Amino acid sequence: LLAFNTATTLGLLFITMLTEPGILRTVTYEEYGDENPDVPVRIVSHVLLDGREYELAQFRAKFSRFTENCIENFDHYCPWVGNAVGKRNYRYFVLFLTSSLT
View 1 (spheres, rainbow, N blue to C red):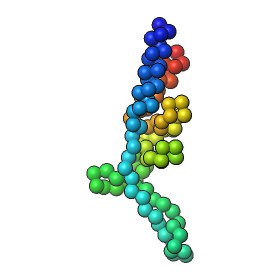
View 2: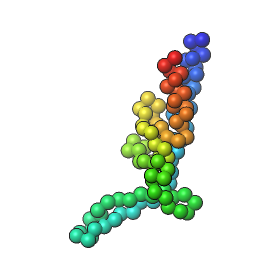
View 3: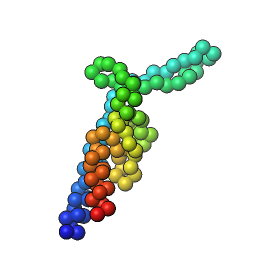
View 4: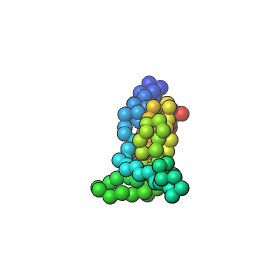
């Protein structure tokens, strides 16, 4: 039973590591103010999907500073698995945690 649990935990670890977390293509714009037109006031990013632009909030998307990508349903970056946890690998991450605690 211990060998099965260890193999399951390691398998889920590798699946979580290798599964792409839900990277979204983005378009970034710089907005300039009236006071100093040479310095951008803020940088705005939108998700690009099927030629249309959407707000990041519509996908619960955030930028991961570790992977430098925009991740859909971004939860966090996990140093244990060396990957961001997002929409496409969240279930494997939860199963990995559950199997490692039992």
